[in-house]
Length: 411
Image (tube, rainbow, N blue to C red; front, side, top):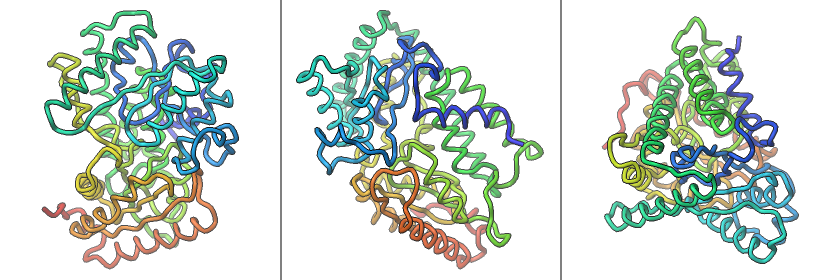
């Protein structure tokens, strides 16, 4: 039986693509849309505002976007642009974007220019957060200045002053949220698995459609359920196995996912996704912010050194992170799903494959054509073949899955 906490998380995540004022967890005027993975939410919440992740509409036509945005731009960004123009997000008054990828930057410039050229068109007020990730003092100085400016913008939007204590309180709350998400990742990585990748992605992404208190309560409820084998829905959380065999344990990398369609397709092919390192998965739980330091300094240090997108991370660091994450999740292999027009994750593949080979893990890569929440027929065939090869590779390794439990990442 599905627990109430799991059901509420699933429901909140399912509502995210169709976020409308009547479905929001807070009053409409308190919502700030966010696009990108490099936006500090702590100052937003300290201003009494609620960050809502703006998502695209996979597979939908983009006639308005086609008038302004080059076809070479990642179709995810094009879809978000379309939804801002066609009225789906017409109720949004404020939108924050960041420098996590070229596509997000372009989206900001397109929106800013359109606001200038067509002032009568209803578009949200914009803010841009530019965080540098080089480990240099000059980068820290620049980033701190940008964050201070972001705080001033939020004060203007909210009509209230943001003091250090308010920011510090939100730092404590976000640390607790990340701690619980890491605990969920650890339970998810147990063997046999107790949670599908689909449900895990929903549990991570549901925060946008819940109040902070409701989200933490649901996370704790789901963790309690998974920690008690007698309450869990089953060793694989509902994943159907083929021929009575255990599903192959897959760690996902590549482009970020803002829906469960591809997760469902992977798991329907005989796998279970036990972890991922794309920006909308377990990566959101990485690290903690210093709760004792000056809040703005603490935020600067945390976000300067925290990078979750391929476009803002070195290839070597990405490869190391993928190998470390896959081993920690007790994966049998790694599957990279790459949107064709999302170039940065493609650059990582060769180094990831070499690094995973050192760790004794096979890797498969599939290029996803366009921005859709489910594979097409040809992609479905590639997916089934890739999962089968990962399963064969797991079976050939000495001792099978048990050997993977004792595997350490090679140094």
